[in-house]
Image (cartoon, rainbow, N blue to C red; front, side, top):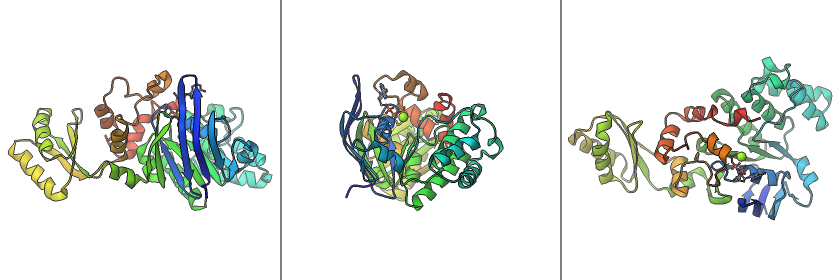
Length: 363
Ligand SMILES: Nc1ncnc2c1ncn2[C@@H]1O[C@H](COP(=O)(O)OP(=O)(O)OP(=O)(O)O)[C@@H](O)[C@H]1O
Ligand SMILES: [Mg+2]
């Protein structure tokens, strides 16, 4: 039996661009599918087709058991959508926006008011609740839009890059809300460019690039595809990078990376802690001073690079100018440089770095 979100052979072209090039999806009820892909991969196009906003050229889509092409109206009644660009009424206050959605869904005035108040608190909009939305910052609009998508809990939800432009506190808040929704039985398709986010929230992940699903599986399965663990070393001085690289290659089971800015080297290995001890000894013998060294499992970043040959933030090959600008470090940045930026800190920090360059300003 097909899942709550099902697609078969979806194709959508815009002129020469094949935004969707034969996408198949099957999301079991009550689970989260993380659709992961770089700018221009086709994520928004897929969401628009599945939410009836766009007709595909070819293919089939069934959402909540209803054929999307045959009965778009019925589908619309069974889904919630939070788009990539916040759709709020600028001239209404935050509270009015949410109450309006409740009333559209035939909630009583009292219920709509209660739900609006709950969501305003939840998304830290309490203080701004009675100001018109046009006075909101980009991140506040984003949160209001997400809150609007959550006024009612439809059985199937789509969220297109829900955390883009959110600060760490609000991102965590949204993650909590999503987990509650799913615990309550909602099926969710979530797009993201943030590998950590898919890792954290999704039961299954599909990696999309150039309109095609290029890999799918659980986060663990995808990680397993890149093989063993990594030794990661930060050397004390840049002049030690070359020798350290030589040493690591001697132990490596594949291509490593060198990130000069952070003086960090990474190489896939097998052999665990025993091998780590040998690496340390050898580096010491060769006079390499180490600031930090450790073993880590492959991240989804490694997965993406090994699947596509480029990091997740690289702009699309279609030369989409705005997207390329959004990607920030893609301007002449090598994979190594992008990797460096993403790995520079904890997931939240890595995401933070994106907030300023992301689409928050494009409303
Ligand atoms: N309405 C449109 N007209 C022309 N081209 C379009 C249109 N919508 C999307 N495209 C193109 O289709 C491709 C896929 O776009 P889409 O918006 O689905 O990507 P995405 O994965 O959502 O990217 P992002 O991460 O930047 O949001 C891109 O090359 C884009 O330029
Ligand atoms: Mg998009």
